[in-house]
Every structure is written in structure tokens, then in C-alpha cells.
Length: 360
Image (cartoon, rainbow, N blue to C red; front, side):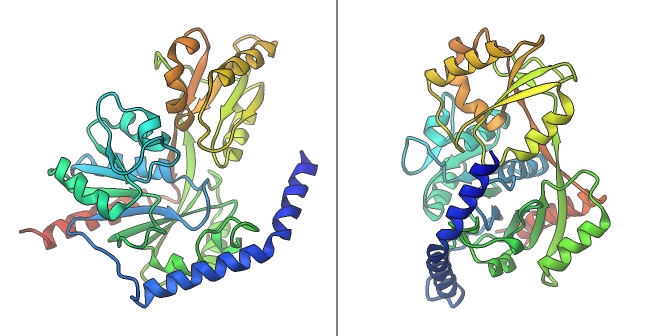
């Protein structure tokens, strides 16, 4: 395992010239947008963008869900995503009978958990937004999932996420690092959230992050940790708390499972991992392999545990999974240092102020 880590790191360092080319392209593209040589489009409704500067693993989906929970209590909310790895093209609005293959796993997760919220996908956001408003004219706010680099569209409120264990200020361009945007692009965000922080994060660590980040005067910085909920059965949705005598087969296809694995190390007796690529499309052979690996565990109370994102890609195998103890582990962001109210007030005020300013 350590050999593979150092081999991968060495290969990424060898690709440094390609990182320089990627950085040059990204800087030129942003310069053209910043100087308005390439035009951007705005809309007369509040748009909140959730994004990052790196590839995957910062918690965009849990943050989108956080915003849905917060805003859908007062406003009619829709979400718009690209729909990564879906089998369709163009604009699709989720409805009854929609599957993850049609809209992608993360939008399907939103649709399952928040059926009253409009969930749409589309490669071109500036084309998809008018279609959302046509199909759902009652929509008052759209949350843009992973659209920070989609600069053709100018959101009114940008929430930038960066992972505590791999912050953008210590990163470098792909493929040597994980950045897909230049660090100075962080200046476009109104809010920066450092995610996946230790639950007991110290104020010294907090201030050290802020010192390296060097936020602008108008920017608000928050810190969030992951809270794991009680697992529930994939098909019956019956809850089942984890316990110290449990043996777990962890099945996941997510960008960064490290926090999840650390959590399991503390909560269960033993866990084995069956790792897949991010957004992996499961096959029936994968299901058979899961069953074989579960059978190989010797303890009592053994289960398969997966993420909510993976669950929407597994549920299509309903009959094959019927007799398997396969459970889903929900996650949420929790804002640290007693700043949850300030965080939520900033977001609600943006939407409310926008609505007042644009009343017909």
C-alpha cells in the first residue's frame, strides 16, 4: 500500500510539465473572463454556487443538501448539476421514475431525499436555467452544484469548499496536484468553508488556516466537520446503529473515503474495504463479489456499508440485494466554533435581499 502511494506520487511529479501547461491554460482563461473579453450571463433570480478549486472530495453534495434543508423551509428551491457519468445528454428534470443513469448519482440522491425540490441536470447551465424556470415557474432560487469553474454563468453567491487535509493553498495544478483552478480564483467566493475538519479542531489550527488562506475583507470563512448519521437499510430503510462488535464490508466509490474509514476504525470491530472509482457504475458481477467478500467475514452481525452516493447506483439491483444486509451511512456538514447561525443568516439574507431588490 505504501509502495503504491509513493509510486503514484512519483508519477504525478514526473507529470509536472503538464501541470505547467494546465496552469497556463487556466490562468489565460480566467484572465479573459476577468477582463470581460469573454462575456458572462446573469439571471434575475438568486443563484448560489457550491464549488471548489480541486477535483472531488471536498463535500459539495452534503453542502448542497445543507442549503436545500435551510432554504426549502422558506423558498421554492431547485438544484442544477452537470449530471456526471449519466447516460443522457442535455437538459433533464427529475421526475417520477427517474434513475441515476438518467441524471447522475448525486442529483439522484437529492431527488430521493427532497422530492419536493426541483432537481435538474444540464451541461450548459445558461441553457438549463431558463428551462427550469419554464418547467417550474414557481422556482425562487437555484443551487448550482459544482459550477465554480462554469464562468459563462455568474452566480450571485459563491460558496467555495476546501478540504482541511488538502487545502487549496498547499496544492498545485493537475496532474501533479489536485487543482483544476488557480488559487487566486478563491477571490470570487463570498464564503469559504474548510470542510472535513476534526470535530475537536483547535482555535490555533483555525487561525493557522485563516493565516494561510488570507481571505479578502469581504469574505466570510467557516469551518465544518462531518457528522455521520445512523445507517439505514438500502431497501427497507430500517435504521441500524453501528456497534463495537460489528464486522463491516465497506463498499464505496467516492473521491475521498479517508474520513469515512477513520470513522469506522473507531466505531466497529473490523472493516474490510471494497473500493471503486468515483461515480462507479455497478454491475451484477460487483454484487456477486460483494456477497463473496461478505461471506468471507467470520464474525457475527456482519454487514455491507455504503455511502448515500453509492446507494443510488446500487438500488437498481433490488432483487439481487434483497437478502443482503446492506446499509447506507448518511452524512451531514456541521459548522464549528458556534458559527452555524451566522453561516445560515448570510445565506438566507442573500436570498431575501435579492428577492426584495428584484420584485416586479
